[in-house]
Image 1 (tube, helix red, strand yellow):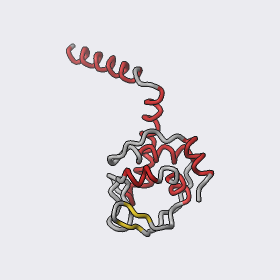
Image 2: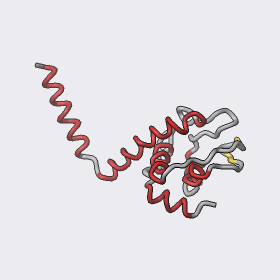
Image 3: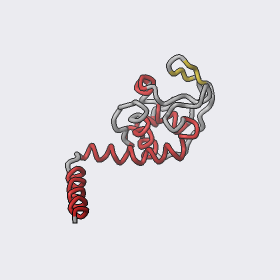
Length: 138
């Protein structure tokens, strides 16, 4: 009987928690969760489970200053790859990141995950923002 009461209260609290979230919070949650799956399947091999990178070969994703400074280019890096020197902190990385055939929504989701994980807090990056950024890739 006690278990049923506790389960019922837990269910009510869960419903209240999710119903109290704003649309913006729900959108962030959807992007972040989907981005986590994409990251695990496509990015984690090189950038690491905690975004720490791979020694001197693959750059870490833990430098929020780099991510904020290059926010408008991040979608381009994912879609078209990188073939340039990247300096993060005091380290230079010259390896090539391959292009990915991701849709703008996939890029937005993985960017929302990366830019809000590993010590980063940059909010939702929408598919509309990614589409706009992809139009001006250099």
